[in-house]
Length: 303
Image (cartoon, rainbow, N blue to C red; front, side):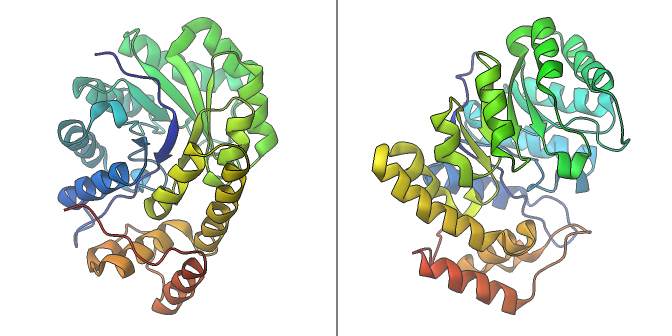
């Protein structure tokens, strides 16, 4: 199937978990629908925020299959990153079987000090084994967690070999100069900032949007920035950045789950897989008080 090019505000969505720490699929779908209804242009399921690498391969496949069945497929960018290239291939095949050909993929992240050529070989193998010209891979640049930073010349070589299949990047490095370098340095390469803090900035240099964790709570504010122009965008970005900073003042995944649990009254959101740990109630009190200063006092999930 053909899919439109992803752009705008994508939420790096959380994975609600049941008491056994398995994905709570009904809540996942309900939250996903709220995100789309609240202004998100798409969903990056099973990324860092989704605790993907704390889930089994089977659980990740089930999440992808369920999302492809229950949500608009042209709004999905599932994470398929794995240390084992065979697992990344299997997850990519699962997405394609469900009608989704756009995926987000980490580099192999266990071994450190690896050469660019080794990372290129990882992605070459995915492309060769999938053998689908409609595949679109977005590289996930998060060197603080993976120990590897994508280099412009390396990505250019992959683009030379595979063309539009190596479609773009989510850059979670926090280094705007790096985001700008990729946005300006590779024609047609689609760069998403990994935080809404840089949404206005990345759009100004030719990037296409953001894929961000805190949109799990701030989706309507993200949408305002993306839709606005000129001074209105600058003003909306200032509020959005303040909300982002309030949320990232604590460990981000536990904070987001805790805030959603507080706003919705649903204790299931306090479940997370080790090594993530629930935040103390006092920490959530402090975060929600700070959010309220900037106008965020509730969120109502879609029925």
